[in-house]
Amino acid sequence: MAAGKGTRMKSRIPKVLQRLAHKPLVLHVIATAQQLQARKAVVITGHGAQTVEAALAGQGGALDLAFVRQEPQLGTGHAVQQAVPVLADDGVVVVLSGDVPLTQAATLQALIALCAGKHLALLTIDLPDPTGYGRVVRSGEVVQAIVEHKDASAEQRAITEIYSGIMAVPAALLKGWLARLDNRNAQGEYYLTDIVKFAVQDGVTVLAQKTTDAVQVAGINSPQQLAELERSFQHRQALALMEAGVRLADPARLDVRGRLVCGTDVEIDVNCIFEGEVSLGDGVRIGAHCVVANCSIAANAVIHPFTHIDGGTQSVTVGEGALIGPFARLRPGAQLGAQVHIGNFVEVKNSTLADGAKANHLAYLGDATVGERVNYGAGSITANYDGANKHRTVIEADVHVGSNCVLVAPVTLGAGSTIGGGSTITKDVPAGALGVARGKQAVLTGWTRPVKAKK
Figure 1 (cartoon, rainbow, N blue to C red):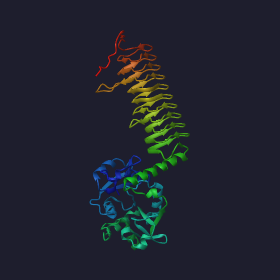
Figure 2: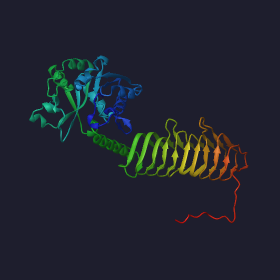
Figure 3: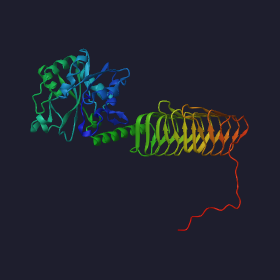
Figure 4: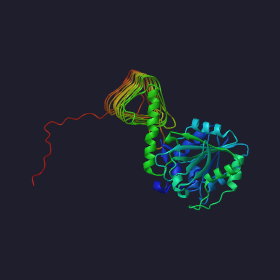
């Protein structure tokens, strides 16, 4: 169900597209459905339907993703009624909410097993303060009813077991019960929970699987709740990393917004953010305040503090034993070999640096191929863009580029050549040669510095 407006979010973005761990809430739910190997996922849209459907188009992977609309929004039962035409009679329907992102697949598998293709199975939880939630009324192990808070008696409101909004139910039975819903209640809405009384009337057993993990059934209704669930999500990821042997300086100051795979003896300092697909080899050390996205970092590399790495769709690779940062920036297409050094305030984009190459400070390498053991001086840049096209700079092995040089692409510096500091190089330099291109220095003796006029 993804039709709600989410008024309390105070946002023009539909609630189910609000982001947790850098991913829309509803995509977390769809990812869980993929883990269940469901044959189809039906997304019920309403508020911002076009925006939600456009955001989810093509996101189902192998999962058949269908959309139906609930307009107007007349309650949870009315929402599920819209899905009836696209539900196969021979399946089990699992009802999920697009704003409840962290339910685990194992929990739902257990709920499906409890349903067993013939029962109505509900996921429930005990809450210390169940105000606002539908209460689960039991007779022993069997559920007799779910009573919405506004319709509950004082005795029923004393019940602490609530319905999470998640159920597993045979599709054929669900369709019949949905047809019998009415809106004779305090809200004037069609409650999905009313199917419990229809199941009881029809002699179908209603069972409840109680979870103790509140995070799995937590919904998002406000920015505060979103922030709280983000921290819960990140804490769980931090615990999983530490259980796998990763050393975190402070598990409360880590954000993983994608998939982070770590080898042995990996160390991560505080306030680091990992996005997209990131792989850290054995012995990698990540300094404080780094942002690392879509990158593969080989064994024993060190990423010093305040480094920004973002591979985008091209990815970035950092070779074994490389030293990066502090304050370095690696952009899409940066491919760094073993023992490469990229120092403070150095930017690398769409460039390959072979083993042992060094650019230690204040430099730019764009659209370049850099050979082994190249020493690239401070303040030097590749001028790779002419305003219309990108051109490549080739720097062969053992080249020494002095400080404050401009290499105007396309240009090739031959192996072992040297570029004098302050040079603007526009032509190829042969192997072993010295390339110098700068204005002749003039010294004026007897020159007097201007002074300010007296007021």
